[in-house]
Length: 189
Image (cartoon, rainbow, N blue to C red; front, side, top):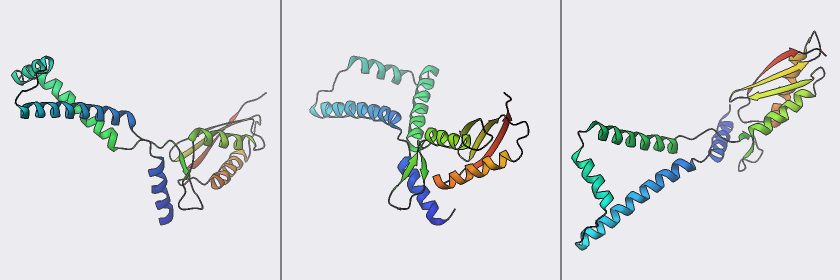
């Protein structure tokens, strides 16, 4: 992969990176609630009349009195772990929802959904002479093509399907082209 291809890959990966909205909303809501409670408490304490929230006072009194209690330690450890997990979800990007494709314009990013790529490549494999049915699995680095043929002796069918798939992958131009693996199965009529 050349330097320009790596740059295009990084640009496309950034553009197609899925957003982690649910963990972000949960973390934002919890932080906003904590900030509002802290702000209200600070303003009330500064004004000379602390806020009295009975449920919060009971919880704080229980937590302050029972730090040595194993249940308190387990609950606080789980809360800390949940916060770290949510933070990790927010920082680590998920799998892209689109497969980035090469573009002649360096300022544009083009992509195709994995489902559309699978359907397109399966229809391409179906058009090869001797293939009655084709199924495609598209992984991160590999394209598995399973073709069914009525021929008892497939001969060079795997090579023809492989060549056809590689040719169409060149036309489709994914930034990271997968390796093609073809599996031929015989199904008599």
